[in-house]
Length: 127
Image (cartoon, rainbow, N blue to C red; front, side):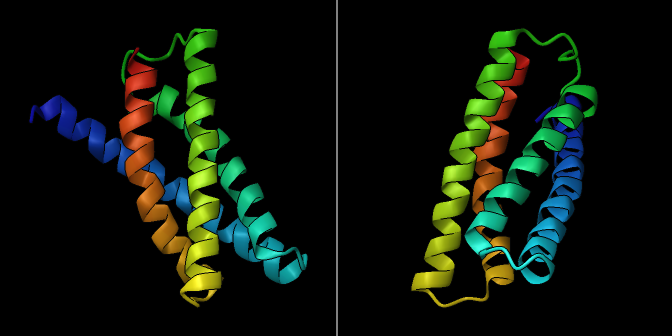
């Protein structure tokens, strides 16, 4: 692994961590304070964090990706939508079937979706 790739992964993890904090905090606030059903809250919080993540990936994570084509942006959001479906499935599975609290389920769902996000978004953003 090259130094450049290692630094990219570190930047990706940092941005992912910030995105996770946005996602996790918004999930909690929408569910606990706004009284929204956890799967709806999860979809909203995930979507907000994907938009934030996209912006930071372009600006900070993937060097040389600042000039995005509409096609690259579309694929980034398509992979995000697939990530949303994966997130929602994991949330449902871990809460409804396994019986975890929705906030703990979110941690496991995020771990699974993170792998999907890095592999697909790196390919899309880098072109």
